Image (cartoon, rainbow, N blue to C red):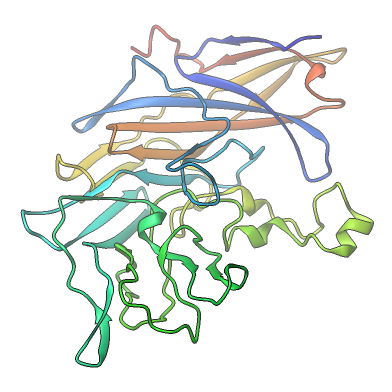
Length: 347
């Protein structure tokens, strides 16, 4: 039997993804992704709907050296809504050296300090950061946040890594010798900025956290000798489903957003302050026809909201899942609807 027939009657993009749950049982994951255009204080359904980013999208060339612009669709469930901001911090005026970016969605709110380029220097026997350079805009990516690799070790194998953000900048292991010219982060937590060489501070950002970065990686459980003997290929017993949430610290909602929350973005758009309300279309419903089984309805949850101020777009993702007996060949047909909303009525 080939790929199941997909009948998408919504105005949005759809993908059927086949994964496994903690017990290695095959799961059908239904992913509906809506693309909206930001038009002043309003959002409108985009004429061209962006596809579901199954493999994700990196800023750079490889996961080892780059953060994700859009995370891979590797979760069969999220326990809450991830909220993400993609874009640049804009200088408040010509010649400015720093600014703040604030991102608020409903009850969630986060502010990050943004400074121009700086490096560590030694002057008159004292070590300190150089004065921030003026800037026009700075990308809001983890490559510009605290973290990275300390390459001052005698061998590459001994290099220390900040496992919270291996692609960042400014991290130096305890006891590392001073290196002039080491780049400091552009993005900082307003309550805990870098003031001394070798200091470890929080990772400040608004983007997706990679699955092998801490503290997210620890939620995946313990893959040790006991796991190999007693559980493999099942997930470890201490696997925590919170692992599937990938938003930055402070940007995972308490439960699921409903889609009518107010959004404010300050400092991350050339248009100034952005303020609008998320749309609240009916939640997509998926009717699945299975081989030799009754049809099953999958209800979805809004579990990812991405505001992209570089594109003036908002992406909203609803996800649902259904355990299968054998795998993809169990699925014959998938019908996706947003009750009362079709491709035509959404325009």
